[in-house]
Image (cartoon, rainbow, N blue to C red; front, side, top):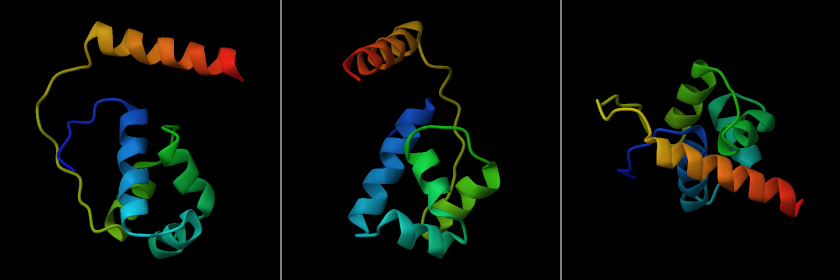
Length: 92
């Protein structure tokens, strides 16, 4: 897990992949982190959550947060993300 994460949904995908690699359900991970299942769902969906919840979930999966200078997402990355959201909305 060495990808640079700059958007919330990218973080969510990485968290979900890690949880699955540990063979944990959302409920099991939530219990380990001392949080409710909804926190796991929100983080994995790239939705707002608290920093303390994120750190608790990372710790429960044996991960730590490290900050590195990488810059902001490019305009193309942001546009692509919005396009994906619109396509998902149209499909629903």
